[in-house]
Amino acid sequence: MSKPAAAAPLQAGTTEPARSKPPLHVDGPWPWLFIIPTVFGIGVFYLWPILQTFYFSFTRSGVFGGAKFIGLGNYAQLLTDSTIPQSILNTAVYTVIVLLGIPIAVALSSLIERPGLKFAAFYRTLYFVPYITMPAAVGIVWRLIYNGDFGPINWFLGLFGIKGPYWTSTPGFALVAVAIVGLWMSLGFNLIIISAGLREIPRELYEAAEMDGATRLRQFFSITVPLLTPSIFFVSIVSVISGFQLFDLLYVMLGTSNLAMPQTQSLVYIFYNQGFLQNNKGYAASIGILILAIIAILTAIQFRVQKRWVNYV
Image 1 (spheres, one colour):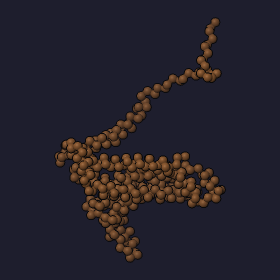
Image 2 (tube, rainbow, N blue to C red; image 1 turned 180 degrees about the vertical axis):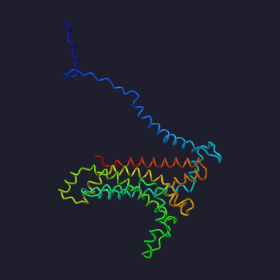
Image 3 (cartoon, rainbow, N blue to C red; image 1 turned 180 degrees about the horizontal axis):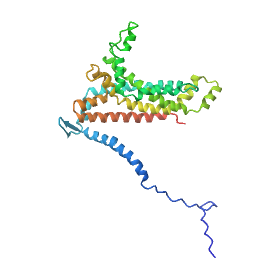
Image 4 (spheres, helix red, strand yellow; image 1 turned 60 degrees about the horizontal axis):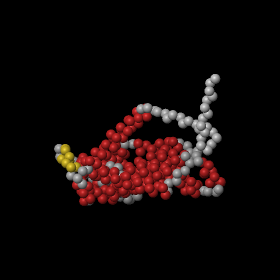
């Protein structure tokens, strides 16, 4: 006769038999084969250039190449360079103006995402087109629009007897003119992200608020805006990072020989000027590290402050 199977041991404090844990499933090398291309791309195109730039920031390049280690000489020059504070201020002003596009995108998204609105997808596409257009092409078009002699803006002002300025050649107007174009280009991206957040808000909340007598304006500020704060936070992060990378619009719309460029140049333009025009690659690398540090600090501050105003449901 065969012996009866031994009963499974009881778990401590229970009357049920202990269940044996399933064996760990071994995936083998397949997960690594899928992530290696991504890791390789990040390492080659992101991490290695950052490390290389950090190294070159401690060197000085010769006219015919080569690099000589000079320690903190480039960073000491940053502290005495009078163009650096002005460029940081210019970049900050540009970024603040671009950030004003976020509340505009919230208002437009609320109008486009109204229930029953026809051609909503067409409106979203219309706003998104400038974002995917090459900045060089956008800059050329807006340079013609801002032209002080025959541009449509000054022509329209002339109808009322107002003589418009040379928008891209006057130091007081050039930076604002470029920033308005940057706001216009970023509006489509902000609108798409915020519209996606709007579609995630349950309609039952608006129906309940309407039954309680809340007006459309009250619903907007009490339901829409608080529940959109995660999307607003995301687009604010992206806007700050892209704002401190200002170069292409500034370069195309103003040009290197523009009289307003010394008072309007951004940090990235100084990086380009030192690295590619002046052939001072070591100093340009230190400016690149400064830009990276500023963006990292501002992003960390935004993540720290978002705990006070972002509502995650």
